[in-house]
Length: 179
Image 1 (cartoon, helix red, strand yellow):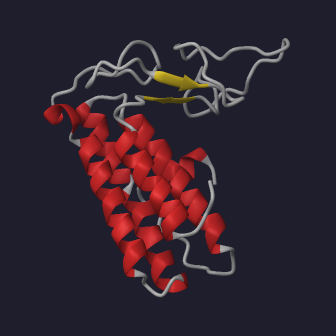
Image 2 (spheres, helix red, strand yellow; image 1 turned 120 degrees about the vertical axis):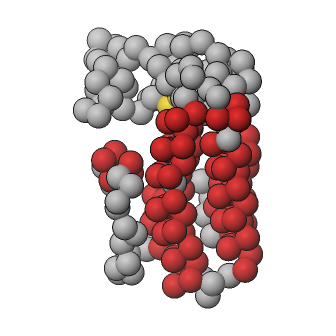
């Protein structure tokens, strides 16, 4: 799945079930995680847009639950908890956040926690968004975010607690996937 597919609000869930549902579940959970992480470090206006983009992967998870898990009440409940946690992140700062920290610099515009920036090798990088060269090799550049490292994950660790917990529970206890 490309970055464009992940962020496309018009993308409808693929209803062709010739694939392994756990692969698709992992893709949708990752898509939600990426959008939610971005919500923690951006303006209230952007949070609203990103929140709207989470609706398609939530819908896809509900359809997978229905088609492959017998419309499990447990899974549906975990998905509802996840959706509520995303609404909580969308509502941070009561819709008044004007500062954007999606470059990874500074502190969270809501809770003032230092922004976390994860590098491609999954270790915590210094709090900046400039790609770091390793052994003289420059990291790939994301075509959608010029100058940004493709794998760099920038988020507020404090504001991410509700949805990361909900994602973990849905993944492991709901769908039975170890992430």
